[in-house]
Length: 290
Image 1 (cartoon, rainbow, N blue to C red):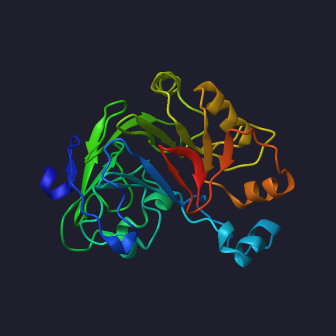
Image 2 (cartoon, one colour; image 1 turned 90 degrees about the vertical axis):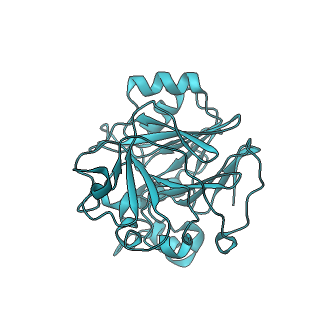
């Protein structure tokens, strides 16, 4: 299969981006700056969960502050904008043509790629999509890629997208999954979702890489048995301790975890915060803001 027909490139390359003011103010031209916005912090079901009347879901229905869309992040540095995952289904409205340098996929589960199924049929500049070398992908995305050009990234091999360097690190999930160590100038943020714990190689890499902030999967409240595919609070904190994380933001949050947090306020360590849709982390202030 040719790379032209399949829309797959064997390795990454540098990509330029164009900012559009309709999707927010242009970040300052600063090669040392790195800004990460959490566009979505929910699990596959989101919050509120359809049909659920628990206090966490009822709260989210009443107050948009507590709603959680599919886990997605936007990384910005200088004039470069890189999207991490494509679970949001309104990508065409959020990001006009030419607005993104690239999209990085953690993996090919539907809740992380569903926004691509509509976006791919657009026109205009092609969009590079960096992803783990998963031979299956999701549904027919490889076969009918449209304006998407898939790039098979390799673990621990840095890829440059405009002003942002992204180094894939393997995670532990039911499908081949990468986290991304994001770097611009001296600023470093690690985005680690979806995972249950961390592989030894990734732990050693992250300990030496020393991120300023870690965005970490935490789907469940503390469970009696070790969970599968996603961290609970205990395994998330264990992973954070293992890599010596100085600041942690939890994402991929379920309504069960939100309910537990409502009843256990102040339980998390001071350096750990729970992500919210719209939260922003940058290199000048790793304390999240809205």
